[in-house]
Image 1: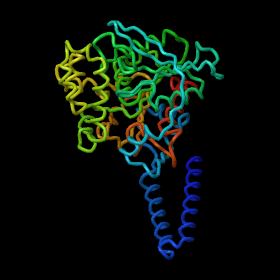
Image 2: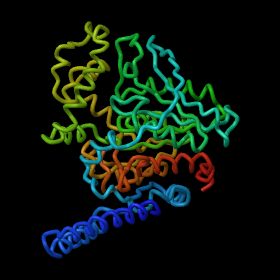
Image 3: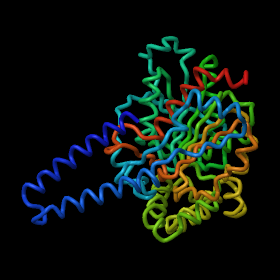
Image 4: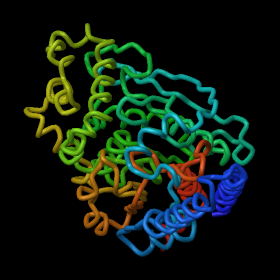
Length: 411
């Protein structure tokens, strides 16, 4: 709120200087121009404050989790003020990768082996200079899962690491097979329905630091994978809590929304080419089991999944894969505290597919639903370079769980 007030004062000052200049040069030759601008500004401000800036909807399955979040993660109950000149879903989604900063992060890479002979690339931020947690064996550890074709270099991942560094935590980024520059040793990539690689990573990290508080955060497809894992394993996980951001809850609904003409043009086709590029680099590994020429002609994510992903992971049809990939089916089985942030205007995850009623039945689940924010957008402030609403939710939640998580077991 304080930052927003400062931003609005700055905007008002700049507007006043502009108007003063226009009056000096005789804008429209009279005071009509001033009246028009002031009238428009007042009308826009009224519309923004009444229709755009809103408190998120907080949906919890139990009073204990709700009260815990209000006490220790108050950002989920505060009014979210989207960037005043860019609050529409597609605008927020498209702008975020270009406008947000990329904090410098020095990683330590580790390659771990999998049961099938493959390898997974982990990028560690050890935070050995942590003042709050000087003992590395008990330093809180956050496992981060990027989106569909994302890696540890994504701006939203870098921001999470930067915020975790401020808290004194350690981070490790789980890069899906074949996307972070490592060699693919077996003819297998990844999908959000198969949780075997994630299980391997969680077991590995926990074995290294069994005494450290262990949390996870997944973004977009990374969040889908995380929720599917939690839904399968229930409470028998070394993770103490998790957070997800901009998850696609129902894969059928996501695909249908992204295939609308404008969304296909802005997002679907580009992401399809990214997927094709990521597998084409390892083309020689797949030619015996998959028609790669057919894969490279796909024009949508659904076509890519039908020709590549569903075939690779042994699904009989694309519908079978999409059914298994949808985390809404497993939300009622999640056995640890999970906070899920979604925007209801996200074209990647239509609001009608968000499992509100299911969330109300699970005391471990909290949905935070903003009216605006797009897909991994959540931009706020006049010039949203440094921090987004998503970043603030992440920081407050992981800190709340590390420092006060014991309260939930006592409620």
